[in-house]
Length: 114
Image (cartoon, rainbow, N blue to C red; front, side, top):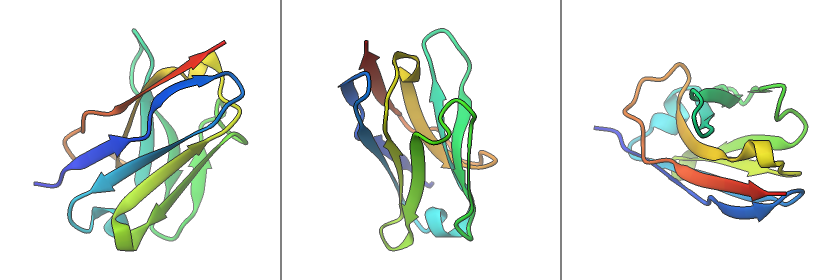
């Protein structure tokens, strides 16, 4: 069973940056479009960034211009660089295929203080 392991979250101040990593077992990252999702406290999980197999990226309006998704197929890892963080970016962040096919990992908590 493919496993997803997110890391890199933590506490940041508004305006700061964090880089998240998602390590996948197997060759999932090179075989499927991948997405970063987040679930703010008390809200539903939402897709915030997407990267196709060919490298095309797309972002939710709320993060466009601030976040950047990338991947390293050789390392089976997807990254999310988050700049100009805002308190409303506070959430648990997850990765998965897009559309989702895999069991969700534990996620990584991102907390942005004002």
